[in-house]
Structures are given as structure tokens and as C-alpha cells.
Image (cartoon, rainbow over all chains, first blue to last red):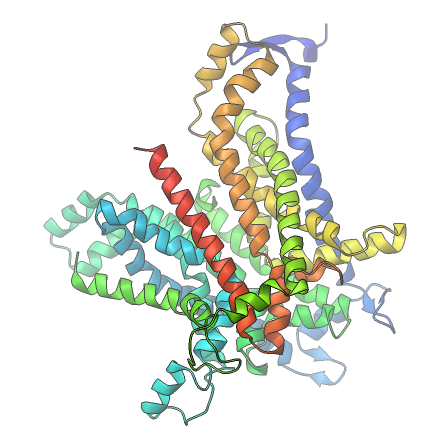
Length: 305
Length: 260
């Protein structure tokens, strides 16, 4: 009898090693196989294509080249042009600023949700969940109505002397930021709220009793407790925000082009798939580096879940 | 609660709801153009229900969401179950890898699948873009979410129950059918609901993997908005808003019944 046929008792069941292995493979293989074929291989494909070049009619051709990445770094055939590095920097900055603004709004909202009475709690949670589940595209184009030249907001800014009558408040960076924060705020609030709900307030009390001022109580007694929710929520804002293409497309002008828009242009009208792939690879690397840094810092996979 | 916190919170709610409310309000506006209120009408809803393109898009959206959710729930639940129940080499790594598709930007997943389908089409002549390629794409982003949700919900499942069922003489099939599966069902249901909403909501991946004859509601809304917002599109969006609000309220009420 070989080692793999030896029976053992697993959760009250007598089972051979081989039978158990068969069960593991049977349950894991469909999912793992699917993600291999439709997720991992396509990613390898874009990495490969990013090292090829565009043929005459938008086809993909060899030989192997670094040209796409050189172009992305600003070294095109017309000499140095900072256009693409600026877009790259802009995407990351926009992601960071959006995350910071969402944290600024998310903190009071999460504390409010945690502190309303029991009767109101479900209602308040539902009030955050409804925008969370509402189509992002709908919530995005709605800002075109809100910021329209004959809308209420434009009337208010005109009355305040900030704009002239009949002027729309979009396209522009301000419109993009307002919409980004509004769209992604629920994604930050929900995991943050889960952490705030679990805060052990006696620690804050103890800190206060020991003479800490309000900022120090927050910094040393509260912040460490809500860190997991804050990190998970920030990731859910930062990572999608850097890859956005719909929001700048509908609300921004040429000055708010992001990595996402660049990818869309290359795969759409420009038909330069290798260059588009290189940009997609860069976005992918930003995501993997961010996740990798956090995983190293925090170790546990549960925090990301 | 400090009054300032209450005040800030309600202002933030106003900020969250402003875009949603404006779409709903303007779907009842008589004015065809512009953002000024002219009077109440139901005309845009009447026009919408006579619009073949919109009805087709609705049909495509529902077929796609139902089909992809069924497949992704089956595959994802198995994976979530395995990652909680069995210990095997590479399990921890697999759990970590499972989070990558969740965080990868939509557009990266979209263009990588577009490339895959293009190459398969060139080499084998299959995968012409359409509803089926969209379904494959949707299942791909749904599986990790379902697996993560099912795995998390299984954390509360006591292994002693399965052990007891075996001790009472149940064979593997019976134990799974009568003990494990019923205990997994709330998790599977939660995963399926999440997968369904993700599919309904998706625009970016659908946009890149769709063909001419497979327009879904988000794609229709996007292309219409690019030409200029019409009250008809507001009416269509209002229906989507009402559906997601109704789903949220239903789930909230169901949870209340679950935990008295």
C-alpha cells in the first residue's frame, strides 16, 4: 500500500489521501482554471503586446521593442515631450487627492453612522448603501446636470461673482474631483464604518484620563483601531480612481486626461494596441506595487478582504 | 452626539444624494433641453417603454446578469468553500492572488480580455464579440468576489457539525447535501447578489468586450450621454436607481428578520 492510499480520519470521515486530493482539485480547479484562462493569460498577453509595435493598419507586429515604454517615459521620435509623464503623475496625484478628500469626508460619516441610535442605524446604513449600489455611470453623468450653465449651482456661483452667467462649471478639474469624491465616498465609508463600529472606547477614555488632548486621543487611541478599515477603504478609492476613464471623459477636458483615458484612446480611435498595452501595464504595476507594499506592512490577507 | 458631527454628516448625505435626486427630478421635467424646471410630465417614461433600443438593452442586461451570475456563483462558491475547508500547498498564496482581480482597474481587465478575444478570433475563428464574450468577461470579475464572500461567511460555520453528521453515519454526499450546503446558503446568496449587481453596474468591461448587437443599459446610457443628456435617459436611469434602492431596502429588511 502506497503512502497516498493510506486512510485517515478527517472531520469524522474515513478518507484516503488520494480521495481528499481529488476533492481539493475538484473544488479548486474550476475557479483557478477560469481565472488562469480569462485573467492571468490576458494579463500576460498585454505584457507581451506592450513590447511589440503597431503595424500599418492597427495590427500588432514584431520585433521585440522597448519603444512603447520609452514613449511613455517622454522620449518620442520628436525628442523629449513630458506629455505622458505628466499624465502618469496626474493620475497618481488625482488618486491620492481623491483618497485624501474621501477620508476627510468618510471619517465624520463613519463616526456618525456608528453613533446614531439603534432605531436609526439601519436607515443610515441603507442611506450609504443606496448610492453604493447605484450605477456609477448614472451618478457620474448626473454631475453634468448639476453643473450645467442653467443649473442651480451655476446660478449660485454667478450670484457669488465667481463665474459669469451662462457659464457651465464643467469640464474642468473641479468637476472631476467633485464627481470622483462623490462616486467613491461610499466605497471608503463602508469598510471604515465596520472598523469604527468595533472601536474599544475605553482606550480613548483611558487616554483622556491620562491627560491626552483631543488630537492625541484620536492619533494614539482611535487611529490604530480603525487602521484596517481606513486602509481597505483607501485602496477601494485610490486604485479605481487612478484607472478611471468615464469621469474625466464626461466631466474633464484635455487637462484632465488620465491613464484610463489614454488606454481607451489607444485601444479605441488611435488603434495603437501595443502602446495602449504599455499604459495598461503601468497601471497594473501601480496596483500591484501598492498591494505588495501593504501586504508586506500588514502581512494578513484578512485586512484586504 | 456633537451637533457639528450631525451637521457635517447630513451635508455629506446631501452631497451623495444630489446627483441621484437631480436625475430622478429631471426625468419628470417637461423641458426637452437644459437644466431648468418647466413642469411635471410622465411623457419620457411613455417614450422609453416604446423605445425598441432601450428595451433590447434592458433584455441584454438581464440575460447577461442572470447567466453570468449563475456560472460565477457555482464556480466561486466551490472555490470559496475549498479555500476555507481544505488545507493544501499554495492555499495562502491563492487567497492573496484572489484579491488581485478585485483591485485591478476595470480598464486593464477590459483591454486584456479584448486582446485575448482578438487573438482567439484570429487563430481559431471563435469569440466574435457579443453577449457571450461579455458573459465570459463578467464571470471573470464575479468569481473572486463570490469566492471571497463565501469564504468569509464560512468562517462562522462550525466544523463539529460536519463531524457529527459523519459520526451519525452520513456518507460524504449526504453530509454535503444535508449539512454543509444548507449552512453555506446565506453566503452563497450574498455572493450571488453581489455578482448580480456587479454585472448590472459594469460599464467599462462591457464596453470593450461588446459587439454591435449586444448593447446593455450602461453602454446605451454612455453613448446617449455623449450625444447630450435627454429626459428619456434620465427616465431610464431613474428606473435603475429605483431598482438598486429597492434591492438595498429588501436586503436590509431581510437581515433584520434574520437577527431579531
